[in-house]
Image 1 (cartoon, rainbow, N blue to C red):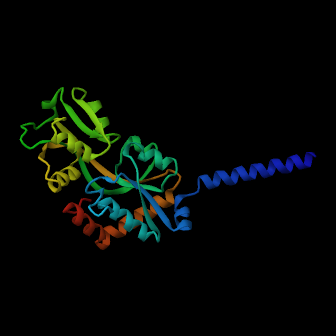
Image 2: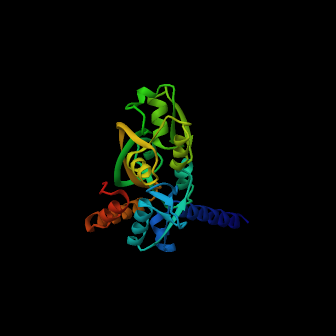
Image 3: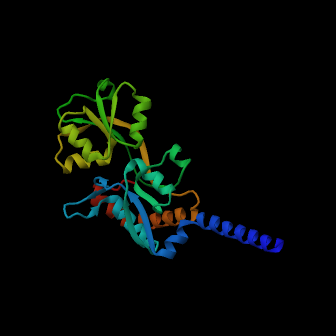
Length: 257
């Protein structure tokens, strides 16, 4: 009986150990086994990710994710996810990576790992085209729109407590309220804002210089250094052979590294 108990204890310990190892296995191993790379983005952030007129998920981040997956020998599987839960979804194992314009910040680095930056931009204030506003200081007490969970929300609440911050699920919703004069302006990525108001013929413009610069990277779980390094290598190759530049110019009009 004692021998049987010891054997069962040993088997249970072994099973728990195997489960622990499986739980912490590098995601690159899973990508190779399944032949798929799953990556998150919102689908509500043109021209980086959005649903086009034909109903297809398109954009800069979509194409970057697709080509990275291809260079890993995997099928790309983009996963549309609400922005305010996108990091939580990665930590919960709902996808392998975030390739969705996620800025590299000290706070996020506590939870996830990032590749090198694959594009650079920054936070920009936008206002109606006829506005004389050139600085956030001129909007004291006014309502400013941001996407829920983006770095812009936290920055405004910390650095500009004198403005009213209103959060939205995505940039399209922000632009609707700007056109209906429910907000006095909004803060978003400079590239995304400029191209969206141009392509959608929105009566808005950038106001003043960047509020702060940002570098965007691909996020992976901290226990997946092999996947991070493999994505870095894929990006390096894309930078060198011109594929990245072609994708960037197609969607953004310039190389934004």
